[in-house]
Length: 176
Image 1 (cartoon, rainbow, N blue to C red):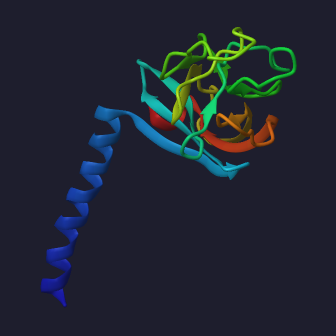
Image 2 (image 1 turned 30 degrees about the horizontal axis):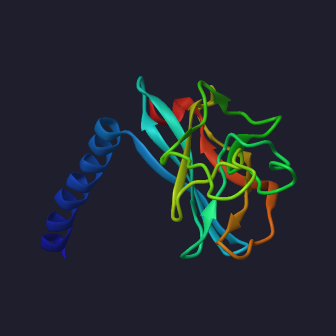
């Protein structure tokens, strides 16, 4: 029994030390939520490190052959067509935006009218928002707002507009 304890104790200490140094050196990478709505897979993440800032991101993966619309089109689309792909903080969010929402891929002008209805190429799109964590030493319940619409050359899935998604975020003091 003593030999077993002597063997496990150093192993647990090494694991604990690796976990601490890995978090401090590389920062955090947290999955906050994931779901599928109207055939589009959505995952929400938080990444970053103390002193370097944090990025809240949402990755949208539509079905094969479907595209999403630009984050920059109006909320009600262009001439009623399409809906923007958005990741937004809610009115009472404890996170604070530190910059603009950016996209992982460039938009394209469609090969149909209206030409202002900018689309992303078929496939996955990630939107990222630099954020400041709340000044707390604990984990907090929060929400984000998601909007998107997926279409193919011949059909569209119903739009998702302003869907409130619950997330749990760390306060800034959790990782200091």
